Each structure stands twice: as structure tokens, then as C-alpha cells.
Image (cartoon, rainbow, N blue to C red):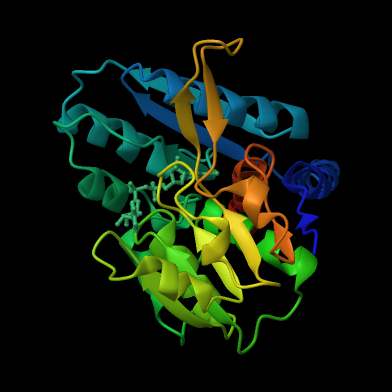
Length: 292
Ligand code: NAD
């Protein structure tokens, strides 16, 4: 069996096009331009690239964006003041604080300060709580998790009753993804560094989502024939003879799994592009819900 390679770039482009059209229609109808504020603390090169890409995506879709870059030694109070201003700024519908934050700033406290109705990343405890409770619909679903579900739906529109295994229990990827799959009626197992016999658990999965941040962790013989495999990992592996001196790898042995699975996402070009597309969608959603 040769797996379908799920084309995240193409699916993300389709979503961005839809958002771009909706933004134009909104503006033509006399409504406000959706606005996103990004906040970056420090000068981590990867974070700078992520923020720049988010701003570029906004630009292309007609979404207003403003970026705040604060020095590495910024204290909590300074960041709090900025977030409080953005929380009430009428032209800003979405606020994104780029993670990770420097060690002197407590991430959870910062995320908890964002107006939950502008929390386009979906990391505020209210949004996380609403995702966890079946009685409620969260205002925002975390972008990577929402993107993962869209990729799965491109090959499997209904996941009811499927055995899903998620490797990773982080608050930004693993846990919300597991909750989202469960809300969509999959039977979900969450694995982490303390899981015993990870390979055997993975072999049960009809749907395997890998978000460990460990290059090529999942081998071909961990995968059930016909499974759908979503590789979230982005690992920079030093490779001196490559043009950039490093290559990007996922968390799975793609070349082995492609002959076993029913479908798999590549790295790059799988989950990565979806995260920004879903951020654009969440920003539009924020604008359409909370502003005239
Ligand atoms: P994290 O370090 O916060 O969490 C990793 C999780 O994986 C932890 O729960 C840990 O217990 C588990 N884990 C790690 N190694 C393991 C192992 N050997 N066996 C079992 N479990 C293991 O990372 P994160 O922020 O959740 O990100 C995970 C990966 O996804 C990273 O590579 C990150 O770069 C990538 N990521 C990609 C996107 C995207 O848009 N494509 C977005 C966010 C994160």
C-alpha cells in the first residue's frame, strides 16, 4: 500500500482563499477590517520567523496586523500593560503571544490575561475549559489542533469510533488535539514520555497523531496497516552538507510509513501551513463575532 500524502499546503491555501473572500465581503459591507496583534518577547530566530509569516499571511488576506517586539529582559508587568491595552483596543480582534516566553515570565499567567474573546490561539483557560467540557463550544480552538482535524477530515470525513492515539500531552498541541478528536467521537489514548510500550499502543491506532518533538520517533513497524498518520513534529537536525546546515524532519519515519499507512502528512508541507491558515480563520471569526 502507498499512502495518500496529505497536502497541507494546498488545503491551507484553500482555507486562506476562503478567509480572504470573507474579509473582502465584510469590508464591502461596511464592517471593520479584522485586526490581529502579535506580541513577541525576545529574539528567538524561529519565533521571529513564525511571527513574520503570520503578519505576511494577514497582509495577503486584507487583515490588519500589528506586531509588538519586546526585549528579552521584559518583565511581567510591562507585558501585562501591553496586553491590557490590546484587550480593549477596538481595531484589534485577535491577540497572539508568541511562545515560548523568556523564563522570567510565567506563560500561563500571560495567556490567562488575554481577553478570551480575542484569544485566537485558544490557549486561555476559559477556551481550554470549554474545549474540555462537552456542554460548551469553545470560542476558539487552538490553531494546530483545528488544522490537524481539517487534514484528517480531508481523507476521513467521519472519525466516529476510530481508535486514535496522540503522542504528546502539551497544552498547545497534544492535549487540545486529543480533546478535539474525542469531541469528534474517536476513542482517544494520550501518550507521553512515561507511557509504557509506546510502540504497542501506537500499533492499535487507526489514527495516529504525533506531536512529541522527537525526530523520527515513530517507526514503520509502529503503524497499523491502513492507519492515518499526522506528523506534527518540526525538528531541526544539523546536517552540515545541506544548503542551510540543517534539515527539517518530522516525528515519524516517513519513508517507512508511506508504504504502510492509508494516509500521512509530510514535514514540511503538512500540519505547518495549516496552523497559520487556522489563525487567519480564527481572526476573522473573532472580528465577525465581536465587532460591528
Ligand atoms: P512539548 O515539548 O511541549 O511537548 C512534547 C510532548 O511529547 C510532551 O507531552 C512529551 O511527554 C511528549 N514526548 C516527547 N518525547 C516523547 C517520547 N520519546 N515518547 C513519548 N512522548 C514523548 O512540544 P509541543 O509544543 O507540543 O510540540 C511538539 C512538536 O510539534 C514539536 O516538534 C513542535 O515543533 C511541533 N509543533 C508544530 C506545529 C505546527 O504548526 N506544525 C505547532 C506547534 C508545535
